[in-house]
Image 1 (cartoon, rainbow, N blue to C red):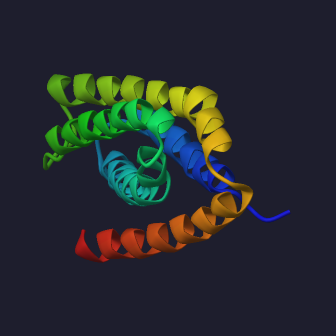
Image 2: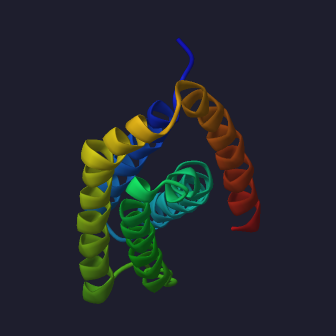
Length: 152
C-alpha cells in the first residue's frame, strides 16, 4: 500500500518530539546548540511542506477552512518562539522558559493534528490525493531541509 501524507507527517512529528525532549534535557553547551539547530530546521522544513501539501488542499474545502487556519496560527506561534530562542548562548532563564513554552505548544499542536485534523483531512482528501501529497511533501521537505542546512 502506498504511503499517505499522514504517514509522512507522523514520521516528522516523531522526529520533532524526540528532538524537543532531548533539547529540554540538554545542558547549556554545544549539544544544546546542535539540538536546537536540528529542531529549528526540522520544524521549518516540516511546516513549509505541510502547509503547502496538507493545509492548502484543506483550505479548499469548507470543512477544512477553520481547522487549517488554527493550525497555521499554531505554526506562527511556534515560529515566533523559535525566533526568540535564536541567541548566541542558548541558555538562561528566559531561554529555558521559552523552550518550555515551545515544548508545550509543539506537543499540543501535534496531538491535535494527529487526533482530529488528520481524521477530518482523511474524509476530505481522496485516496490518490493522499499518496500524491505524500510524495510532494517528502520532496519539498528534502529541498527545504537542504536549503536550511546550507543557509545555517
